[in-house]
Every structure is written in structure tokens, then in C-alpha cells.
Length: 253
Image 1 (spheres, rainbow, N blue to C red):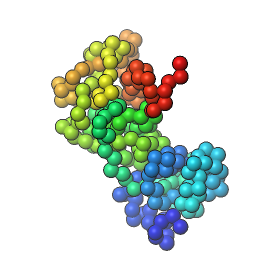
Image 2 (image 1 turned 90 degrees about the horizontal axis):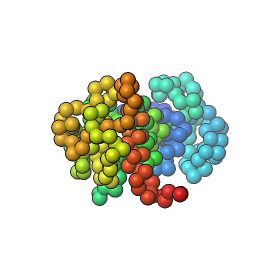
Image 3 (image 1 turned 180 degrees about the vertical axis):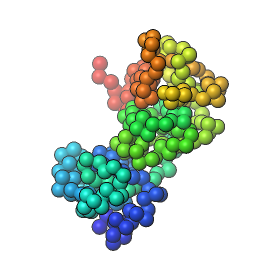
Image 4 (image 1 turned 120 degrees about the vertical axis):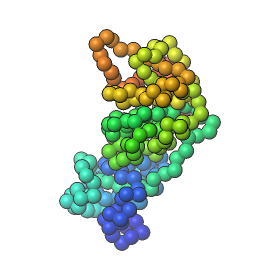
């Protein structure tokens, strides 16, 4: 049984709102790899789940198999708004991850993001590059199930939190804005706090006024903006390309 309760489906209904929803095999796989406390796994196709785990994630396959409880597709659809094609979902305890000290990699701040999928893509990017964390301002919960799904469960690989504008971590504040200095002429320090606004509204004046540096991304005339996740990826790559290591592995020359 995948929880201390005799009925995992009932446990899910009771505890869903104070746990992290992991929708799909890849989200569960990543969460387990990065130490998530996964409490319940419900699958509408346990044999396929077992094969996926054996083929794609043998390091966590035994744990996935041990936790999995079979349910019907109809039941799964009542628990997850849009069930993943892998027909599995899980609940995990929400961690209290803090930014590391000392800081050794940038922190991404998304200023009032509006698109949940973009926010999740940024978390996935931050995890892949070994960034110190992703912070958001505004009313969007960065642990919303749609954000976690877009991040493939990689929230557990970095610090993710919603904060107020006045709660920024220490470090030089770099704001990305079309009127800034060309990013190609800028060196992004390891402890930078990189602030990105939404495609429509950009970064708030409060952040621009506090910025230690305002940088812009190269863009041809008549193009109005980049996708948020694309902007973050370009900026983070500019930082990583100047370093000898990326996520702890020395670059091959």
C-alpha cells in the first residue's frame, strides 16, 4: 500500500491541497531522483508504468513499483484535471528548500509571470543548469500542478518559491529589458539575481529602479519579444558559457 491509509484514493482527496501534484511518469521520476517524499502513486496502467520505470529510470524503478496503486482511468480523471498520457500521478510532500549559502550560481526571478507553462519551463531550465533557485512575484503559485507538470517534476532539484519584491536574496540585481546594455557585452556574476518580466508587461518599474544593471537580448528589428523561457535560456547560457563547469561537469573541449 502506498500510504499509511488503507485507501490511497481517499488519502489523495483529503491531502491533495497541501501536497505537490506530480502528473505523469517523468515528473515522478525526477521528484524521486532529487529526494522528494512521494506519498501516493496512482496508476491506471501499472504494467506500462513498470516497463517505463525499468527502461527509462532503473535507478528509481523499485521505488515506483513499490508505491504504485492501480486505479481506473475514470478515477484518475477525477483526481487530476488532465491526466498525463502515461496515466500515472502522485502526491509528494512540499519541501522547504532554501537558497544555498554561499551562492554559487544565479537565481532567476520571474516578475509576476502569467503563463504557467512558461514558469515550469524556467524551473526545468534552472534545474538543468544547476542554478540556485527560481523565485516568482505576484499571485501565481510556482508549485501549481500545471507549473510542476511543465517542469517535469524538477522543482525538487532547485529552490522554488513565491516571494515579495522586497524579499530578494543578496547579490547584484540584473534586470532584462529591451532598453538595457547588450547581453553579449555583459558578464553575469555567479551570485546574480536575474529578473525577467512577462512578454506583455515586462519588468516592473520597482525592479528597474533597483537594478545594478539592465541588460537586453539581441533581437532583430520588428520582432517585439522572445518567449519568457527562451529569454531565460539565452541569459543563463551566456553565464554558463563563460564558466569552466556546468552542473558540476567539466566542459569537453
